[in-house]
Length: 246
Ligand code: ADP
Ligand code: MG
Image (cartoon, rainbow, N blue to C red; front, top):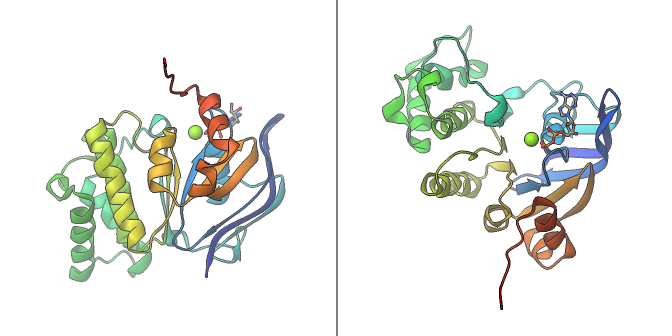
């Protein structure tokens, strides 16, 4: 079984602000990992470390068995950033162009063949935005833009999809459809890391759960998480306790 991402004793601070401390965690091929924790608990930072966007102060990180410092197969990873920090782009670029960029690692001198165009169309179809292919990326809703990023990852044959709170501001019905899409991709073999504030979504969809509050205080399969004290702690820390009057 391939280990997609492996972190050992990873610590990271922004100047003097400790954000992630001594985290050891591995993600296996085919996993659907839900990463949860309160605001400011280090979720985005941990994801950035795992994807090589930040360098740890201490500890080691491997992607697909390779040290992250020398990892150069970015096309194997699809990253859907947190919407709040993602302004899309001010460049005039269409949805089809963005998704086609996913093919560039596989083409010579970015020469797009009819086969590439077919792959791009399939990716747009899979995520349900083929009708929007000619639209400017900046003119999509947040949820549609997330789908465009997923389509780009599919076009690049990504094996790991990392998503940071992808459905914030997306209505409930679209959100369910979005998570059905992730389920289908996972069933087809895509490894998924999902940061999601709604613990119900995570326990429904993920097979592994990691809880972080600077330190990783729980990491297990979903069933063990649901039966553990970490569930109550996670709800408590996000203020999402369900109150019963009787
Ligand atoms: P989460 O995604 O769980 O909300 P973050 O990983 O964004 O948490 O942040 C973890 C901690 O690091 C917080 O205390 C946050 O204020 C701090 N932090 C995040 N980004 C920066 C940054 N660019 N510079 C300084 N501190 C940051
Ligand atoms: Mg975050």
